[in-house]
Length: 328
Image (cartoon, rainbow, N blue to C red; front, side, top):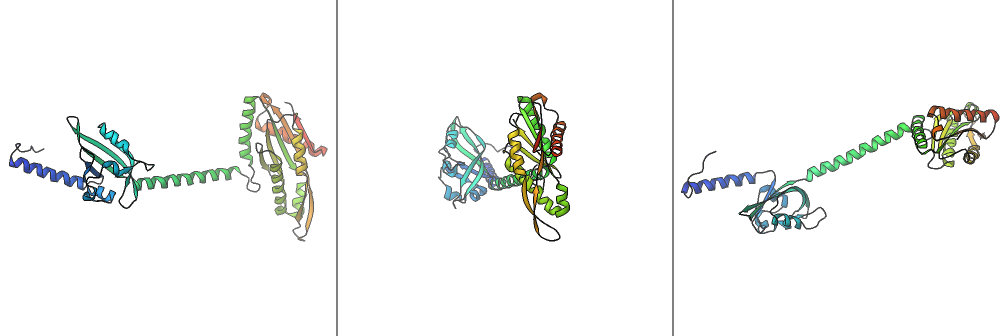
């Protein structure tokens, strides 16, 4: 570094002026906005970036107090900046709002450095970085991330939902059943499974076709979901078979929901004959099996389901409304 000339010489003052021009040029061409005040906080210098940021030139900003240049995020006064300056404390990258001459508000990161001599404030230098584009990009990123999260959630729902009935599918049901089994064991509570299969469904498909058979499946699903509580878990287990979890339901109370289900799922429906186009009434009935276990007596999911399924087959054979395997 070149040493300055001897103090108080003509060369020294020329050197000072050249250094001043150099510093002014550097400040004027900085990307960040720079604002300088006197010891009273009145603006004495702004570079080009600051003029662009505020929408005012140095003459227009001259003697404006620095506290009048900013607002906090809620539109309130930035008087706390003044308190920091009075305590001669620096601040770095604090988010503030610049009030432009055209009324537009610009978010900035503001850093302030109080300059002192012998403990007395002589200048305050402020450096600001416009955050408009950054915050716009951050906002767009938040929106994009939310859209992505929504899409992932939608895909997960699709993967867990039976397309025809909009009930849970087999895989999703098994996940929920394992969760309910774990909870029932932990709290030593009863848990019930209900297995349902429409009677003589194959003749319905044979006579009316699969499209009309799908109508029956959807109606059974709708009625099954409607008759149960929102805390119960209902799924299409496969083909024309349905299954449900009834939490906190023991052998002493299982008969009541089974009766409601049987009455709801024995119904008549008009189906269109594929050849004649005539609508004919079809009577739908179901076989219902239930399995009830409690706490540590609840078997693994596949065994539990088999108990309910076997009870359903007994219901078919006996032509009874429902059968229950209960050992709680």
